[in-house]
Image (cartoon, rainbow, N blue to C red):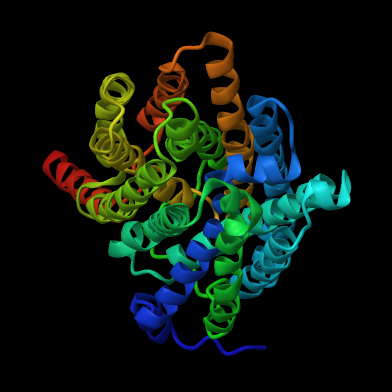
Length: 440
């Protein structure tokens, strides 16, 4: 039986923050996982022409986006299987497994011949590869987030856990930069022929590095129980339901903004490289806002950081899209993408609160499952829904309507979520103790 040491030794071990190299390993791996999953969305039009050719650009794009949505179907499968594996075998082996699956899927996508070369076999392979990608990224979220939360000191859990989201911003930024570079040096025909494949292979080349680094991580599953001031999930089902609504609303916002690249080029008829600028601005906003949200939630609590930026977002969505449609220039597109992206990702504090509200023994699988279900139902359908709504109404403001519904649902959920930040819980405990002393 493993010697777990004395209580004093364990307390010291728990209060020691993870090394910068360990955090970098998790952050890098997470960014790569999401880059490889979401890069598909940024080249949806080119992939549609490659694997789902049609005389109608709308039909071709819808076929590509439908295959994109298949990846979200795999997320709950990965969440349950790999998430449960992370609670049983450990966070590290679960992260390594998801990394290996992602590597196989991305290579399969990058090297699949076009529809013109092998017929219907090509889109069939794309669907299988997207399903594998979904299983990989769905299974990675739970173990990765659990590791970040469990390895962080209590007073900095918000910051460390927020890295799950801010590194997704890194993946968005990388996708935008690569898309901008490729669309600037390649013509439209070459982007369809091989440009999008270069973007996929760029992620595949870095995956082995992240895999090797992750192998050096310590295990956090079997560390001692958290300190008494931590939230111990008295009502995990309540947290899961509210977390599902919160993540669903934030996901709609994320994928509407990620759709700006396709929206700007196909609906507003802006240049392709300018359209990719929206993805770059959105990625930068995600990195800054996600990290800031975690830091502020450690200082003033999760609840105010969840709620107040969401109110501002609801007020800004319609005017922001109206400006894009009216001006149709690069400055407006980038400014609105950054501003809405910044406010949207301030909801990261809610993800931290959800993570803290789940029991450690089931944190990986429960967190991964709630996240995957929300992402599948809302993320996998958002771009399809927006494209269909645009086609049905012919109104360029349709994405704003879709976005507003998600933002309102998110606001209702975060208002009902409970405060979990240790700094706030300690203050409340001290105030209650002081009140009892005055009474007695």
